[in-house]
Length: 60
Image 1 (tube, rainbow, N blue to C red):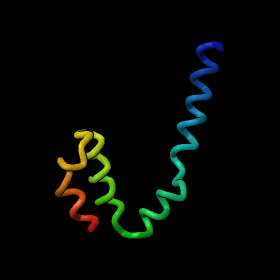
Image 2: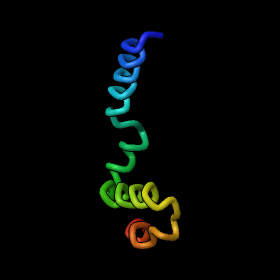
Image 3: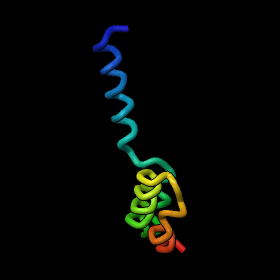
Image 4: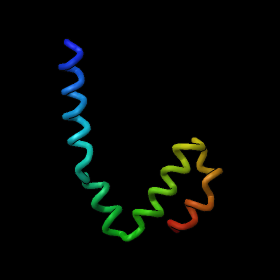
């Protein structure tokens, strides 16, 4: 596969990912999308839920 072919397929995949899926629609409909994003970002950075107690407590 040529380098340009690979790049164009990646661009198509990214384009599809920008559209909200069912999970995103549910999160946004609850009104707590910002809190969910903070919790997810915390876990992504720290890789340990125990270190994200403040962020998780907002969702209870």
